[in-house]
Image (cartoon, rainbow, N blue to C red):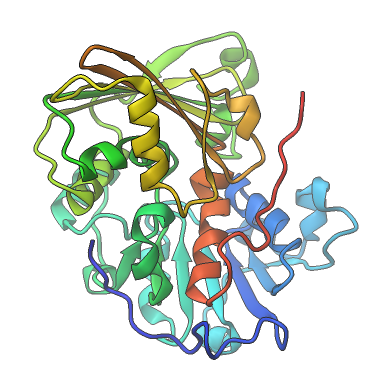
Length: 361
C-alpha cells in the first residue's frame, strides 16, 4: 500500500480530544453527501462545523435546505470563499463537491489544513485514465500525489499519517471490501464478475430524467456498462492490496429504493473452499475492523441503511464463490467513511461519532 501522507499538526500523542474540538469546514453542503456529513458531524463529540458552502443556497439557513437538521444547527450556507485564508484556522476541510471542483481549490489551501475529498478528483493516479472516465482533464496531478486512498479497512496505517485523503467511491467501497481478503491471499483463479445495484440517492440531490420518482420507483435497469468511473479506481486499489492480474467485469444497476448498495461478486477460487473456511478467512482479515460484519447467507441493505457498516455474506459450490456486500451508499460509501478517516487522521478511535444504529423496519 502506498503512503503519501505527511505528519500533521496533530497526532494521537499530541491531540487531546478532551481539550478541544476540531474546527471543520464543508465545501458543498447542500447535496446528499453534505447532508450526511452534517448529520454525522453534529453528533460527533469532538467536531465543530464552522462553515458550510453551497453557492446556490448562500444566505439560506442550513436547516431550511436540510429540514431533518431543524433545531440542530444555526449556520447559514455561504458561497465558497475566494480568499482561502479563512481556512487557516480550520483543522479539517471536507469536499463534497461535484467532480472537477475540488481540484481547483485544494492546491490553493494551506498545507496545514487536512483535506478529505469525497469526489473522484484525487482517487486516480493516472491523468489519462481520469480524463477517460470523468470526461475532463485532471489539472492538479501534483496535488494528487499527496493524497492517500481512504478505504479505511485496507489502508488504515497510511491514513493515520495523511494530510490529504481521497475518499473512495460508493461502488468501490462495497466491491473492494468484498474482494480485498481474496486478493490479499492470492485465492482468485480467473475473471471476477461484479453485479452491483444502487439506490437513487447515488445520483445526487438534483432530479434528472433517470432519477425522477415516476421513472425510478417501479423500474430496474443497468447503466454505464463497462464505462463506470469506479472501475479504474477498483483495479488500481486491488493492485495495492495484493497481486491482481485478473479480468474484472463490473456492471451497475439502478434499484427502486432511495439508499443502499448491494454487490454480488462472482469468483472462481484456485481450490475448493467451504463457506465456513471463507468466512473464517474474512473474519481474520477484518479482525480489527469494527464496521465490517458477517452474516449467514445474504445481507440486506435494510440492515445497513443509515449506518457505517458493511455487511458481507457468502455462498460456495466447489471452487465457485459468491461474495455479497451491502452498504449504505451515503454513509459507509461516502460521509461515514470520510468521518472514519478523519478520526484516524487526528488520533481518535475510528468509531467516534459513528455508532449509528440502523432501523427495523
